[in-house]
Amino acid sequence: MMKFNGFFPIQGMFVLCLSALTAGATQQATVSLGSNSTFVALAGTTVTVTGGGTITGNIGINPGLAFVPGVPAVTLKGNVYAGGPVSAQAQADLTLAFNDAAGRQTPVVVAGNIGGQTLTPGLYKSTSSLAVSSGDLTLDGQGDSNSVFIFQIASTLTLTSGRQVILTGGASAANIFWQVGSSATLGTTSVFHGNILAAVSISVLTGATLDGRALAQSGAVTIDTGGGSAVTLPAPASASPVISVSGVVNDASYAAPVVAGSIAAVFGSNLSVGQSGSTIPIPLPTTLAQSSFSIGGQAAPIYLASPGQANIQIPWELAGQTQVQITAMVNGVVSSAQTVNLAPSAPGIFSVDMSGRGQGAILVAATAQLAAAGSPAARGGYIAIFCTGLGAVTNRPSTGLPATASPLSFSVSTPTVSIGGLAATVSYSGLAPTLVGLYQVNALVPAGVAPGNTVPVSISAGGASSNVVTIAVQ
Image: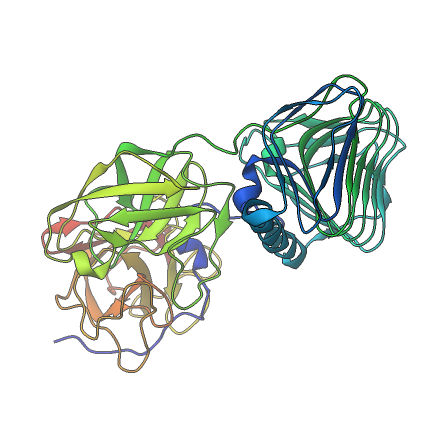
């Protein structure tokens, strides 16, 4: 019979355990443009085009009706929607996108002229006007073609004549958003990348090039092509999602199979638009960074979504099944299905660096300290081991919801724990309260364990063994 020792981690102590990737403070999910994905220009009153040339994409006006094609007339590779339901929906979607971009939190503050700078993906905010005037602005995607840049600009945006926004490191115009509180102006012969979401108006002056969209809520959009190709839609944000063969594994051990209720990593490509991590709301979301997963016909809660890896909870409803299919849907595009093997139990212990090896995500009993060098566990004292994949529990929470502290969710079967090659007494095994899919095993460090900073720890449950991590013991 297990003895219960009631010590549990502080809420969020091991949020790292829920995500094999960690988002920086300013990393952002993309902004959904809805029906505006096919528009290059949208205005509240008038769209005026002069200078001939070519514009690629649709043009919309709402509630206004005026489209002025200029003389000579522009060559439009798209349609004009003046009034009517299509442009009305585009304006409604623009409002949603504008409010989404404006409402993002924890930006890096920028001001005045940002010409000559190089910025990395993230969220930037100007509390007044913003200009690119003293030099070109470089946006460096740092090797990630799905990297997202969002600029919150309280007043005007100005790109002076001849200046450029330069994209490097895989940055894509499709994932650059300029939320402008009033109006935007692109100077003559300038080159600009990204989606302009302006509250009032947008002016693209003679010969300027916009690789993106000019979307204005209440005012006009004016474009002078200078006889060239002034405005084109950017490349799609991402290709079709792909889940790797055998790409669904235990998020702690990176081994298959996985277990109902547990935390799993899904590997592949184009699995999201940008990167976003859940802050553990209740319940966990089933859509994140325009990504969702269906496994065994169930929607999977998502801890983190990035193009190469997503971390999900395997739904509790799949308990008892041995094999199911999983698909990913990103921005409306569904991947091919892959087979996922399930087991009643397949334990994995989280490590601090999320490699499945080395220092374990293991606390000294009743503290927030890792059992590591500098704060070793005592022989004859308790440790708390954080893991996943231990299988069925009592008081099972709903999929996507955290376990409660009262009543607790005990493991139906008690696992065995090895510390330094010796069997350890287990006092509690079950879900960690306030967290989703994370298990906690409290165990007594045997008195006979040889001290050291790399004492091995492993767990066995239902005939399956975990990966091996280490702790420090004194």
